[in-house]
Length: 425
Ligand code: FAD
Image (cartoon, rainbow, N blue to C red; front, side, top):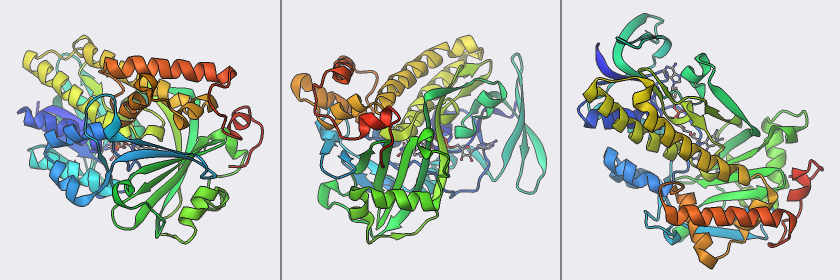
C-alpha cells in the first residue's frame, strides 16, 4: 500500500483529519478536485473550534487574517426585538470568541497547513472510482486536470467530499430530513452598516416569518448575507437574483443595514437539505464532515462539527493502524459518538423552525442559567457537558409548553407562517 490513509476532499474536515494523522506520524494522501482558493459558503466559526485550530497550528494566522467574533445576535425582521448571546457568558468555560472567515482563504490555509505537516496533497484532481477489499486495502482512480487517470492505494480511506457525499451516495446511505428541506440564497456586499467595537464581528440571525437571514461581517468592508427558508415558501418561484433583492428590501432591518451597500458578488442559490448517513463507517472506510451529515446552518455548526469529527476520526484511525484492524466493528466507537453529536444538534436546529422555540430564544431566562446554557451550545459545547445538557432539556421542555400555553411573548407572523398561512417575509 502506498499510504496509510487516503482522504478524498480538502475542505476543513478533510484537511484537519489529514493534518492530525500526519502529526501522529502516519503517511497521508489527500486528493482535492478543485484548485484552491475556491469559493465556499459557511463563513462563521464557533468558539470551540479555537482549541482545534490551535492544535493544528494555525491559530495565530487566523488572528491576523480574519475578523474576531464575540457573540451571536438574534433580531426580528422589523428590528424591534434583539437578543445577543455573548460567548463569554456560557455556563461552561471556553474560548469567548471565534472568527468570521472568508472560506476561500480559510480552507486554503488549512490545506496548505496539511501539506506543511507532510500530507501529500494533490489539487485539481478528482477521485472518480474506488474499490475496497476488506482484507487488503483500498484502491482509487484519480482523474487529474489534464484528464489522465491513475490509481492509488492505501490501507484505509476517508470520504470528506462535503455535500457531494461520495460514499453515502454510492452506498445509498443518505437519509434526508423531511423537516429541513430548505434552500439558501445569498451574496456579498460592501458598505453595509455594521456595529463597532466588540460587536463588529457578531453574526446576526434575522428572524422572519418563514425562515431566517444571516448577516456575517467579514474583515475589511465585506458582509455576507443570505436567506434560508423551507422550499415550500418559494411557491413555485425561483430563488434567483430578483427574488433575493426583493426579499432583502422587504425586511426593514436588512433594508436599513444594506440600503446604501453595494453588491460585490453574484447571487448564489443552493439547496440546503439536511441529511444524515445511515452509516458513518464500514470496513476500511470512514465518513467525516458534511459527507457524514449536514445539519441546517442556523447555528453555524458545520465547520466546527466537521473538524471535531475529523479529530475523533484521526484518533480512531491511528489506533486502527497500530492494531492493523480496520473492520466496521473497530470503528463502532466513532460511529456512536458522531451519531450522538449529530442528533443533539439536529434536535436543537429543528427547534429553530418552530415558533415557540424562537420565542424562547428571543426571551431566554437567566433562571437555572438557561440562557448561559444556550450560549454554551451556540459556542459549540452541545455535547460532552452535563451542565449544558440538563439545562438544554429544561429549555426544550419550556419551549414545548410554550407551544400551547403562552409562557413567552409571541412573535407576530411566525405562527401563521408555520401553519402555512401566507405572510410576507
Ligand atoms: P467541504 O467544505 O464542502 O469540502 C469538501 C471538499 O471535497 C470540497 O473542496 C470538494 O471540492 C471536494 N471534493 C468533492 N468531491 C470530490 C472528489 N470526488 N474528489 C476529490 N475532491 C472532492 N458552517 C459553518 O461552520 N458556519 C456557517 O456560517 C455556515 N453557513 C452555511 C450556510 C449555508 C447556506 C450552507 C449550505 C452551509 C453552511 N455551513 C456553515 C456549513 C459548512 O459550509 C460545511 O459544514 C463545511 O464546509 C463542511 O466541511 P467539509 O470539509 O465536510 O466539506
